[in-house]
Image (tube, rainbow over all chains, first blue to last red; front, side):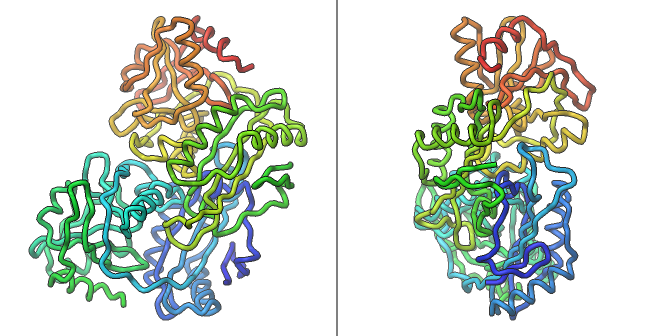
Length: 276
Length: 276
């Protein structure tokens, strides 16, 4: 498989990272993940805008243009024979001296990979996680390399036979899944947690809200406790690789709550979000 | 410089890490840092116990014995000519497939480095950080590779001319510095935040509490707001590399508050903690 590293196309098997890279030692970097359809990146502008915003928060220089990434993504998709897949752009702050203080200037390391991704799975069993999402951590609000709380939420879900995890924040409000935003429908109203719940500003999340509003759907962002799901008709997850994924059931301490993934509004949104 | 990687001694300049290492991509791993004095690791048992506890939380296998690490640390100190310095043991979950779900079984990657460290600096200016420590995140309670919130706290402190940052948690309680625990003294009483404030269980923190109690000092762990520092006589930071470091002043929105680093109890504790 070919990857793109700091502007060069190289065989992944031949590429190696320095042991003093701060991405490796301190999770000190950002990334973004986008869908690939028909060999082209989907909504790349939005993903690169988010990556640039994330990098700016942490003072990490971005050593490439959007056009370079667009070209590289298409080249990798063609070279690796990927029509449907996912791209991941990783931007580490690069190598540095011992300790937390970043080198100045930083010599960031950028890595772009495009790989096949399986078609979206069917409705998911989701575990109500015992891992508490921080509403305040920078690593909750921005897409950084410091992802271990998310990894652990997914791992614990898998141990319990679930494909994803639903995380609440420290105030008990619904936040997100380990690698997805969360939406639910009650009657004719669409709900999703507001960003101040400790939520990543998902590209698919923003698109879905926009589509819903353009169709005259009452779409509400806010702070909601778990009680909100008690009367919900449908629950689903969104991210840029899988699109809109319905939740079949939520597994909690009090048992398993099933949702109707076939509701009319859910189907409309699924059809509208333009992912195959 | 020689490092130890998965049981082999290698030149750091020749060592490279796979681009699909989950430490690099997801901050998916743990580490520990210990002092080196006279070419030997300090309190290595306590550090390895903490690293094993951290790894167990995340289900990461630990592919070495304590004796192997002890021997490797001494060999690296001798080979690299380090008498006074610091060791860092990094344990990544290793390479994996795309996505958050860990590979099973994992093939972890362990890296030990021993390098010179500067002698402790004098009393520090410390910035009251605008970064909020999560009291609930696993990455607050365990020493993981997902460290970007700490990195950013240190970076912002440096921009303001400060050597460290003081972080409060989401309840406004004093938590810790970016890479140190926090203690203060009022009268004859020693205070430090309890672990449930979102605090790493520092090895030096535990030793200092033990020493204080053995000397009959009233040492209190608890939840304290910033108000507690208004009447404090001395404030200091502890970690395993620098030992006990006094705080000269705390820079906040309302100005700069100076502390007396030369108080009698502070000096006693500094002398007692057995770091040169």
